Length: 341
Image (cartoon, rainbow, N blue to C red; front, side):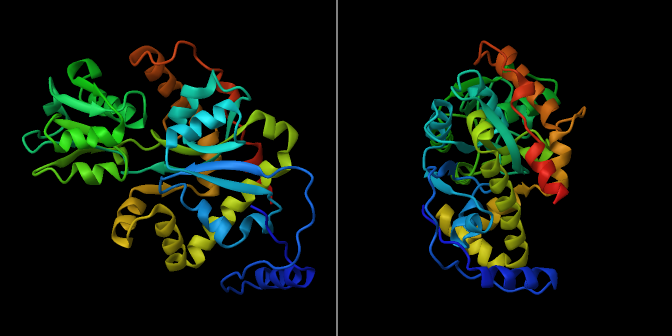
């Protein structure tokens, strides 16, 4: 989407406002944008609470402010967004670490995580029927879950915490929305789901949450992933994306009510539903990003989490045959560059 640039006078005024710690709601940019010989960088995003904030960048012209020539592409079908990035049809996408690893081997232009938007902190749930009290009660029960996606990984972690495995339950492999419907219809005893589908699952009489991502910090990181081609050919645009994201977070902090409305409108949910989803999403600060990209021995560190997820996909689920090179799927240079600023 074509953008307009700020006049020099407005830029100087904003600089003065920032340096003197004055605050006001940013106005839309005005002026005539110069011709850009390169096509816009296309970034995909879809319906997840940690990715909705990108809508603020469009609403408040924050891409323009940071020199980002970006077109956001909304996907109602999250899987299609991952397929388009892997095929090279878009330049970047918002997706989980789990899915990034799943697509890494087949991605034609390479996929590299450059930013942690958030961690699921309760927004992924295992919901069970009234008669099931806790994860141990799932033994030999039917669990509807989309195999290989984050809620399948959550189910595996929850079972392992109780000394169990996926072999102890009857997995019904079905798309997440259909899984919630099957659970509500009584065709499954439990379901693994992300929003808004766990809201549907809880409509079954007596249904209750028995496990969530809140119990496993770092297990479900949600990322901005870009192609290696974009990093090589337009690193300044990748940096502009990172800079824009942190301006988005500043806007959310300064103008929470306005930000919530933009996000709820983008998500197509009412304010009550939005607050539920917001509560289960931990948006990452700069410091948390730096920690996440560093080496460590727990799930809060992306390299460690990637190792655990790869083991799940290869050895437990057997959904991928070849392990991707985990050293190539992370690039912390842009986060570090922002930190220096």
